Amino acid sequence: VFVANHTFMIDFIVLEQMTAFAVIMQKHPGWVGLLQSTILESVGCIWFNRSEAKDREILAR
Image (tube, rainbow, N blue to C red; front, side, top):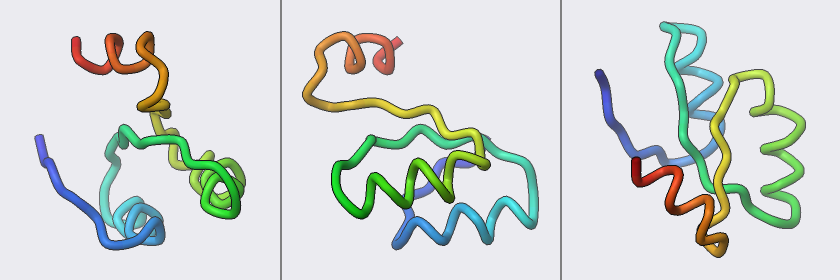
């Protein structure tokens, strides 16, 4: 198990070329959200919204 913080979303694309992994990521609005839904969708991220109590509860498990 590896746990890491990232500096930019492109990090996930680079890491995916090296090894298989899963990402839990906050869903963002605006242009960042557009990048998430178009580019990072192929990585298989698990998305959550911090403002949604249900999302926070699921991730806490």
